[in-house]
Amino acid sequence: MSAMRALMLAALACAVGFACATSPALDPDPEPCTTAADCEVTGFTGCCACDGEPRAVNRQTLAKRREICTVVECKCAVADCRCPPVADPRAFLPACTHGRCQTIRR
Image 1 (spheres, one colour):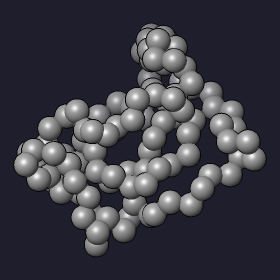
Image 2 (image 1 turned 180 degrees about the vertical axis):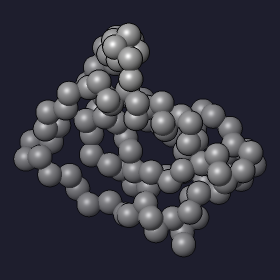
Image 3 (image 1 turned 135 degrees about the vertical axis):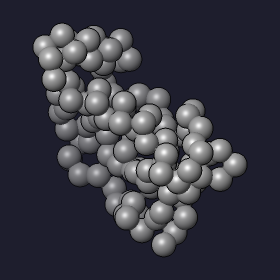
């Protein structure tokens, strides 16, 4: 990654509140899908946050949100640094239904 790109991502991270744990959730998915390949099942909720329950989101939107995390230095966001248990995203498959990403249990 170029130094200029890293700097731009850092500025973006600061602009969106730097504490990515409070960044906007990925649900509802703002990006439409045309096939299940456009979707990914994830528990990602933010750069410095615990994973949430699995949900299907647009793969490109998720990649952009995760890319911001490459320039964010996280400290323990939870008092004792432990996150609550959530379902395993691998127990679900992504699907595209009526132009929106959905999860289907395997």
